[in-house]
Amino acid sequence: MATDHDDLREQSIGELLKRLSEETATLVRQELELAKAEATQKGKEAGVGAGLFGGAGVVGLLALGALTAAIILALDLAMAGWLAALIVALVYGAIAGVLALRGRDRFKEAGPPVPEQTIETVKEDARWAKTRARSATK
Image (cartoon, rainbow, N blue to C red):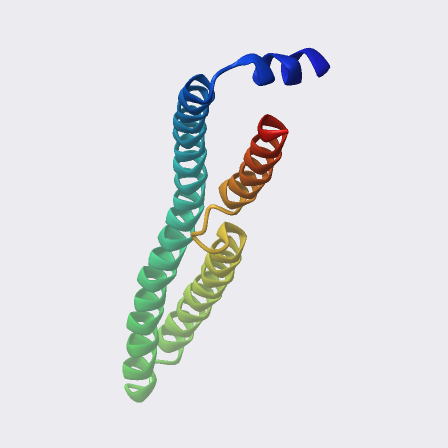
């Protein structure tokens, strides 16, 4: 560590600024890659949740159709027919409920679309750069 500090003292301001510029550019590229990877992961999780919500909507529509058939058949006094349709509607409704709950849970797991890890590493990088700048001026 001491040799690195001594090497910095021997370099000119121009060389130090050039080195800082290169390291900053590399750091920015790395942080952008990290943010991109983090956003992709969160997007995948949200996509799965959206798909489950879509499935819940379709199955919920089927439940409404079956419930409608059950009411029509009940009015027609065809006891066996409406009972069967009601059972189907209840099963579809249960499936829709399970899919909706799972979709909600997946959305919660995805979290906000903020690259939290990238923000933390940028803060660390800023602290590191301040430390390096202070040591270069001593």
